[in-house]
Image (tube, rainbow, N blue to C red; front, side, top):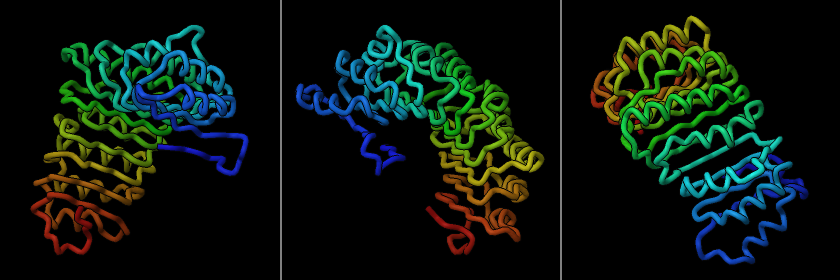
Length: 312
């Protein structure tokens, strides 16, 4: 993803540096020429530690968006922890996508990237490719991760994904509802949460969108949990506009849940997939007199002739 808020400003240069082992010195020099005015850097693949650190150091006073993808986590750790640690005073966005070989508790991510930018980060995207550890270690990783994220007071967008089959639960989401009061967009992919965790998300005062996707997300969510979630949204007059439950076998969402969600006045878009608990009656209850949008996939009890539904 490339972000450039000043496309017409010739003094700033977003750079996409997709690095492979075959990269030549000249290709690095091309990037190096613009390093003092860089606003965005994206690195993918093999990392040359010395060159990368040099570019980061020289662009630290202009850089706003920093992205790493398909990167060996140990290589990245080595680069990030070079001394002196770098502080980027204008950094707003960090994306760590498809980190491989992340076999240890990744506290270096929190200490080297989060701690120095607590009061400014607005966008955080963490996509862990592999975490080859026991459930007890994974539980600690997730717990520490949420604790670190809760310190990002300006955070507005949060995306978390574990690409392996994560079976442990994210149980300390109360830290987000208590501390991340500017959080507006939340996406969890293959990170299971509980009814209590879902309830904590409903307490975020600026919440506009929730996405719960992937095979594992709904393991512990129940009908009662979704009803409590909907009731809390109504009670707090939440600004939530979009709820995406694009998950396998979302059986906890029923006609009764849709009825309660219908009372959330701000909710405009609802997406549900692979569900066997909702029917045409529930869909019609959800709509009521309000103009809404509902997208369904693999919900075999809802007629494909229902005019209120967009099938996906």
